[in-house]
Length: 146
Image (tube, rainbow, N blue to C red; front, side, top):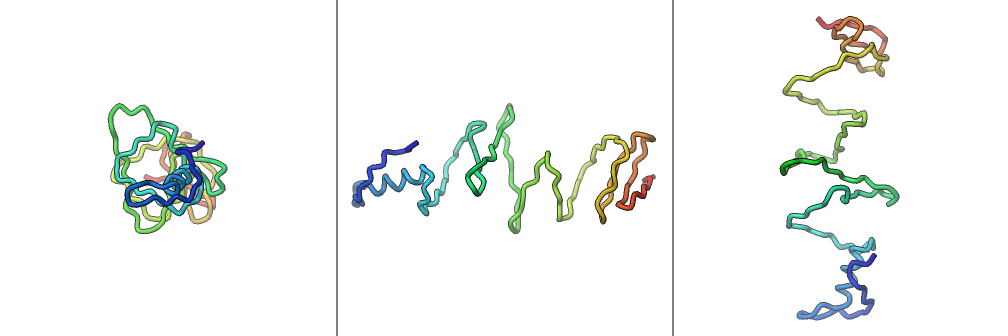
């Protein structure tokens, strides 16, 4: 789909008139043509639910950014990073390589004793068999936390 009619002429325009080249560059920008142009947007831009898509490098699949049925405006603030980083998601097993600080409690659900973790890790759990909080080590040792 073409955003603006491509005129395909070599009219560069002048100080007072837009030329065909100007329209063609804008049309290419919105038509998936590599133009070398970079958009710098300094105005509020609204995307409706299910329309903001981030394509993979091969341009074959998309992440679609979705919104919940919020009842008021909310801000999602990206944290200050000091280098390239990755956003964590709830439904994926994330590995955090930096120390995490939790300034509140954590609710744990009692579960059956889990399998042993990988070497160098422990598993914290509440055992459904006796209701006790335990740590399981990679060598299958289980320690009750008192």
